Image 1 (tube, rainbow, N blue to C red):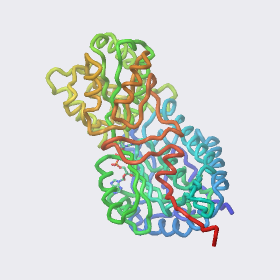
Image 2 (cartoon, rainbow, N blue to C red; image 1 turned 180 degrees about the vertical axis):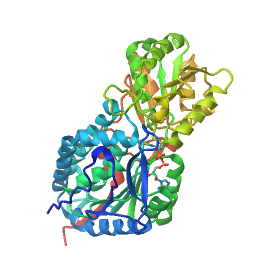
Image 3 (cartoon, rainbow, N blue to C red; image 1 turned 180 degrees about the horizontal axis):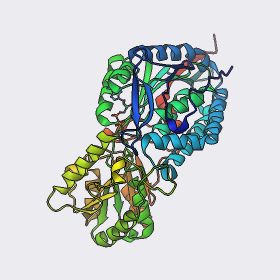
Image 4 (cartoon, protein in one colour; image 1 turned 120 degrees about the vertical axis):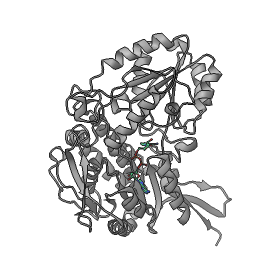
Length: 498
Ligand code: NAD
């Protein structure tokens, strides 16, 4: 029996106090305190407020998820899948509402990012709803007298923690991968961008039994810590920074529970001499995720250009970036919106300052943000490109998580690959050449979990996505990832001669 809950708000541009959803009900924190979510395009204005939840609310949510688990686990997988397909349709119908709220709380441009991410969110539910019946086991041929088979079983209550940079798609991903194989989940979004995540959970709850999907809001140190250390949580799935990922892994180690980690990146884009064209320039811009202000773990933030095309490629790149329309996220003409908050803005500006202070480095586009209106109304930073960068500089090694691309020239293929791999991260990589042998040779030598050849695109549900090295553990986004990370195998053997 599918139960429904009343909408908690009319979501007019996201403004208002929006409660958590626990056991299908709107819940305020016991503390009675609220946390403001700033609209990054309009400094000092609230996009909305969410409860400052902590251990008490986390416990309530985990208990609700644990109570819902037996019935949800026992429902046929295809039936669970049908709920996800209904959710996908409902998201599509509410596309514009989601996109407006998303732009308001994250600062992303509605035309280039918010609508796309809303559609990607629907696609995630549709994909996992579609593969629900593929949660299969195997028969092991131990002889005529033995019937031995394996089955995939859910873990129980999943603790899902997501960052602020893609809160809609990443919340959808944690929810869909957890509940499709029969787990229940408590989701914790970032306090910087919890509104669309709550709206999503509210919508999903219209199609799910009470308690299967719960959302708690609060800071990482109060709410997040309470969730990762809760004794009933049987599996952790975290997307966020490598630093916090270490904490999550420690918490999982204490209770010996499985954990999947999708962490940071500093991904290379390698351009070979035969790809000195406008299409590659457009792909490099896409790969750098400038339309998301560079706030993407997958961003190809290190551009390795062959020295023979270095200057002419950069000329084309800079011409395109200078024409970028930056500004009000809700304006359909805008291509690039605002950085998510003041802390992140200051961090990005500090990295630009650090780059400018390096002898030999040159900001050939962008640089420190303009100090005049309308740029000062929100946390706006222009697309910035540094040429003459050394791969060992801080700006080339650390994740800026802003619209800052560093350019490093190379002569020999082996040198480009060596520099690309010289990073403690290994999330994504982009390779551009018309020579397919060279492209695949490079793709196979790159130490990254997600490689794109001749396109700057992002993840499509069905791609197994995750990092090498300190970019993470486990794979998500795909059927295989879901089976590996969100189910456990049980082996059953029956003696037929008994
Ligand atoms: P973050 O690590 O600061 O926070 C992520 C989430 O963890 C938030 O919900 C936060 O409240 C929570 N958290 C913080 N401290 C916690 C603690 N001690 N215990 C439990 N939870 C805690 O990351 P962010 O600043 O929100 O997001 C940016 C980072 O996310 C970047 O490093 C980026 O690369 C990474 N990211 C990775 C992927 C991927 O798929 N690999 C995708 C998106 C973002």
